[in-house]
Length: 403
Image 1: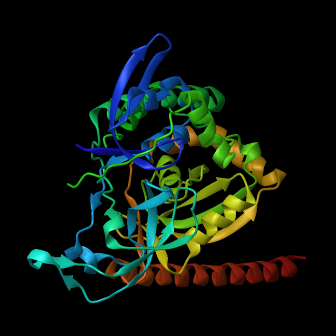
Image 2: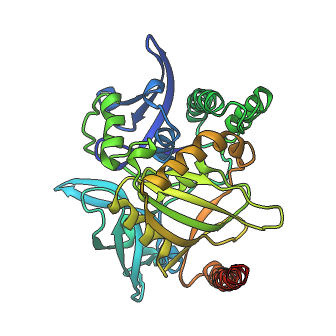
């Protein structure tokens, strides 16, 4: 399968091949770029990936080769579509970065030589990566490629699968060793459950027009690569460094914390911690807590989750609902830390299903359905709030009568 890799050096996408290598210091992943010498190869040692967000950051940089949009496909390009588009960084130097379609200016197509249809429309892009991230540009169809996101459980590349499985097994082994040691008899998985959990987690991983890309700057060391990932987000996975929380309800039962962190990083390049709360059998949904390390990331994620132009849904169509965002004071931080130590191992034993999560944009049939479901859930929660207020009032009456 033809692949593309988003370089750590300039965040641009390049045609690439992946290889695993055993070295004196351990396993590493080697990325080679088409039409470039070995001097431009990038390396990611397994030892540099210490957490699941680190692993997810690597996985999000690999995907199937994007395909050049054809003139006849113009009508299928709608607002919100994720594309990979050419951007001139320097004269005679075009690189490919991800962008969302922000708008389309339709024009009548021409008929060229040989009767071929020629698209003359203009496409407004909002850049996601690269030097112009967050800005808008107007480009022609010839500069746009359709991103081919992998299906759930699709194996993108055998070398990547092998490498990530090995790293993930090591991370989970370390995580659960610490969790079980800390939780003791307070709720950790037993040895048999932990072993079964690690096997399930590892098995979950197995989830054409070519373009010429130029001017890839030679890569730095892998240590610098991983440092750059951490430095860009400034993330510290210790609870003490995560001062802001977002509460999200109406999550699909069975969703894992890793799925939430993975989705957020893929969409916004934000590292975070996420916890999924237990739910009662009578409830058809569950709820989660997302913790972030800065007000900037809080605002970025809040805008993404709360935007009226998009809704995040599960593979079954259940919409996420942002209910509250608050700063973490000492009391909340201590409660979360306790929850993390005593409950996370047991909780993850029951929430390892990797549910597909995706974004649906305004104007699509999926969005219309999701909006109806979201409005219904918000009506339900508002009714619950009313019942809570009534309960509080009735309790007060009873307490006053007892005095």
